[in-house]
Image (tube, rainbow, N blue to C red; front, side, top):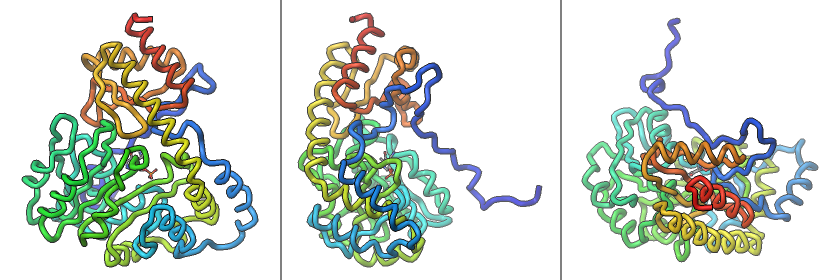
Length: 359
Ligand code: PMP
């Protein structure tokens, strides 16, 4: 066949998402995709039903009401917000607008699998930088910057590690990177971290920092696909030029607006997650399984080796529990376990204890 794709496209590794089906188990306990175990806010569900009356109408092109609601809740400037089909789409706009053939895009060793995909899709070259002790290493990133670097993608809190680097370290990075580089702070899990604004203050203070956020995690709306970015106005203006005018439907906009306004529900999810992730880590450590303190809605259990992680994964599946193997993220010995509701957390920990012969 003579129809060939653009150079580099066939080098893109297909993204593999968390599994949701398990043979022999009609409704497995799914702790593999960092979803909210409580689902969306009841107010978001009411908005979903009401939005049926608007399906024959085209949606807003500027997302003004959703941006205003986000700005109000997070005390931000609505004009610097851009909304997308998941934060994935906002991350994609950035690569599409600021990186191309000959350019380099930096991501870190245990960073999100989409970063190299987005870099390659834009024709650029992804550059992977090592982390230190499962944490982003600012000095290693600075050492990797070249004249060709255009974007640095960082996840904070990290996925699948759950670890964090402080805002002061991120500010040091933003100060030291070359002028042509945009620092993207992927904040998919920011709401679960205490005392961290995702880098919003840095976005406001500097011209080279962008923050991305999502409705998929704390707001329990992964299935609806809504995310947003916060950036300097000039960058928002650039990104809006490649955004499809109707990228978000009436339903997505209405449900997201109701979800962000329901701050009581958000706080409930945050507090339950904070309590249960500490409990899970303590239980894992007591079972002799390594686990860093997590600032997100998952914990990374590190077993002796890949064989033990695989055996534990298989044992959990037997019991109808899905967690995530994270060999592709540099942890062949790891299982990433989403913090579920209390019964879910107890069930997975009891199953791991049985696997270890401790129950
Ligand atoms: N960044 C990170 C670190 C993630 O883990 C995810 C979800 N897997 C995303 C971004 C994308 O989330 P969404 O597109 O659902 O907003």
